[in-house]
Image (cartoon, rainbow, N blue to C red; front, side, top):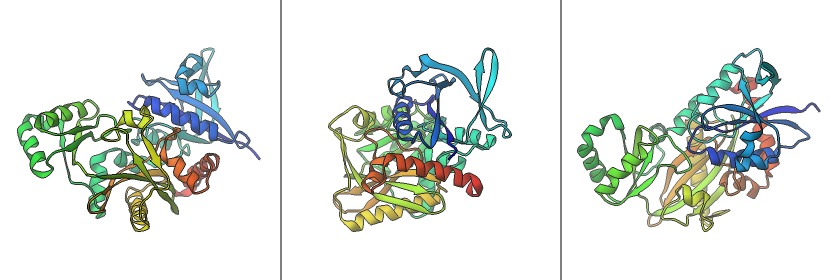
Length: 357
């Protein structure tokens, strides 16, 4: 059987660069070397593309840059290749499918997906539109609202309107009250999120979130539990069981996710079947609403007092780290990481052969 050449793209310019290194390392390790020729391609924090050859451990530690050579992705659709600089000349390296193991801006927001589309290279994950709207929390919520999917109350603002600061703060207090959460509209891994408990903290939280995006979303705080489930597929989709997040911090921020060993996940979640099934149905509904393809992780709150299930957000390139819920939920259903990677590559090729649009 002829091997499939997979370019695994990792790193990137976003605030989630280090998370991407962990995800890519685990994805590469899970790819069956008997079926795939893997070409690791790292993007530095400055945006330089580099082809890497060496042990996967150097990707985890960030040392990969020392052992890499400049490379670019050719936008020429007749080539479907990488161009590696060798002795002042570019060598063509053909690829069959791209796996963007990238998180955050310029990775899962539709930008690199547009580059793959232009080059007509099959790629793992959601398309340009679904990646863009799912990365932007404001537009995700607008789509969810149109689909009549229950969510926490929220307002949003663009920082160009910050000269109307008092009116914005008054509106947030009137509609949401305290505490409330403030988030950049375009960011992942809980980067830039703050819990505000009064007007002074709210103002500071908005300015902090604005470091990451000019659009800022403010949400009511839900006294509840946090759950996630995984979606897999193109036209025909599968939804995993449900897992629960038990954050060691006051909320599941970046540090609680990746640096606090006391944070943990419970799979399967200890929740009644009716609530779990409702989450699974909502996950499928929002995945279809944003025109998802390949994979996504869908996050929920469940109010402690009422038991009401609320959609939180959809992540089109969920983490693949050692603590990431997405692969663990499929493992709980009997699918190994290697089998999951086989499925993702097959879905990418299937979508390119007529479903992509």
